[in-house]
Amino acid sequence: VKPADVSDPAAVGDLMAVAAQAFGGLDILVCNAAIRRETPFDQLDYAAWREVTGVILDGAYLCAHAALPYLRRAPAGSIALIGGLSAHTGSKGRAHVVAAKAGVVGLTRALAHDLAPGITVNCVVPGLIDTVREGRSASGGEPAHHAGRTTLVGRRGRPEERAENAELLLNFLEALGGEPSIADIRAAVAPHRPAGPGGRGAALVGRAAAGS
Image 1 (cartoon, rainbow, N blue to C red):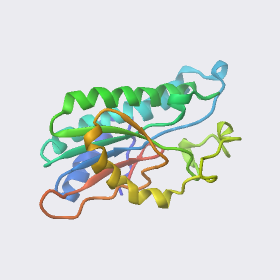
Image 2 (cartoon, rainbow, N blue to C red; image 1 turned 120 degrees about the horizontal axis):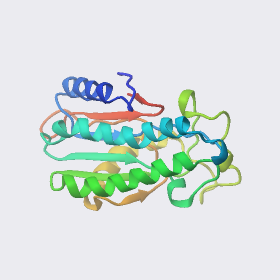
Image 3 (tube, rainbow, N blue to C red; image 1 turned 90 degrees about the vertical axis):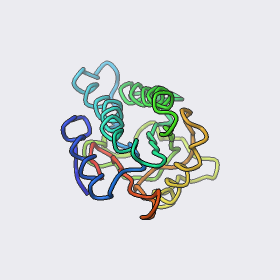
Image 4 (spheres, rainbow, N blue to C red; image 1 turned 135 degrees about the horizontal axis):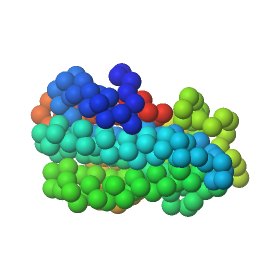
């Protein structure tokens, strides 16, 4: 585990170098860092706007850019950017988050064109997941926009259920480069491919501007 501020270019570069050295290379990059506070727009100052967009959108750019030299050496590199459902539906009090997550979808589509062939880029959009938000990621308590919302199966997803899905989806989505996949998953951990031919490591850039 190596903590890193994903809005800091130098820290991100160091993070990727350490991960590549530890794994002997990188095959997969998962960008999941986010700050998802709720703030009414008339109270949203520029500093708060930049803090959120700096982690979510700038962080995704910086991580993908820093990981690119390592992914290009992989037999089949793959990038998964974690989006947000509110980027597609809108949400009250989250203009900064919604704008940043919508930007992640645009970045996904652009990178899918720029990096093909050889590296696939996809955006995974989680549904409602039963998680506890802490530190910089949280606004305190249950997000207001979650009130009254549910899933078709009547409960929220659990992070432990989704960890096993991450690698499966990264492999499955190779055929769908550039399109957001709206699914009830959250990449809580970064499973890495088994050591051996074509299988080195995966780097996860986790929540609240921390690399893990």
